[in-house]
Image (cartoon, rainbow, N blue to C red):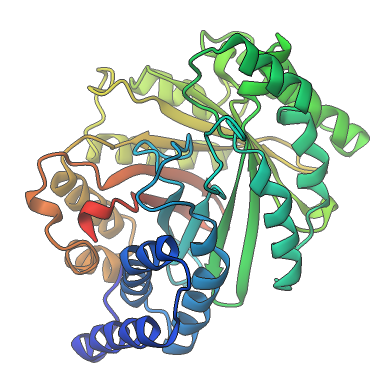
Length: 414
């Protein structure tokens, strides 16, 4: 996160002033919304300031956040436990850095819409908010927004009424109950929307195989638009792993024209060893292009800088990865998510700063630690070390390293 090049203190002061103005002028009529806004609005403003957003962009995106995210965060304090984050809040913020092309960092927001009924007997699996939220997204007229792909997969990956009733009758203790979520990339030229579904609960209720349902649903949808057999390549590899049972626990797509949308299938493993990371990155050697090999070099350096090591995570958190395909793609693209939740925040912040500097993003690396201090006061003295959640890595020849850092919107830090 770079501190803005000129008049840094002035820029930060302007952001705080802007947040105060919004507090005074945007009157939340609901107490819950007022508290969510009070806790998270200034944090988003601070992150955008540190990433170099203009005042105009900050105001635009704070208004979007206030109108389209805050009202769907549900009761405050939270009563529904979202499967989207480790701390079970229905909100997560992240920042993305791109090595090549001169792009500035992009702040992203992920949200699982929640109501006062979410998690109760009336709506134990948080189904009710999704339809209303899709209608809301249509009304705000995000340029290029298209929900046809999401609407296709949503019923295939989420509970129907009969399945929901079956689970209620069985009265099972199911922790990960979430059905869907949405992500927003706050880009210089507008908002990009992504949809997420969580097929695991449906597969459990229907007693079906998660991996087969997740991969099969995308294969069925793409059909002849997958001429290179990328999904078969993914399936062939996953079938050889011990993590097959968990593969496809999350699916995501871009909410854009269907022929342009990416399809991502997520897997997870407790094996943090470099040999496992390398095997996952290359689909067990099925991807061996020069681009993939170059990316692997950068990935290994990140693994070492973050000191992931071969041991399992002390909190039992998984390493997560996804494989991405879309119409006409020759080979899948891989993204790896290193879990840093519960590890030392200060060490990880310094490791990220070092890595950004090593890959040539000195202007961001040099300022990163101070930027985190500005956005999350007191993060260094917290004993829980649960501010940072994930550090994700992808690579293409066009973008170079594509690095994202995910923060819990932990209210302890705001």
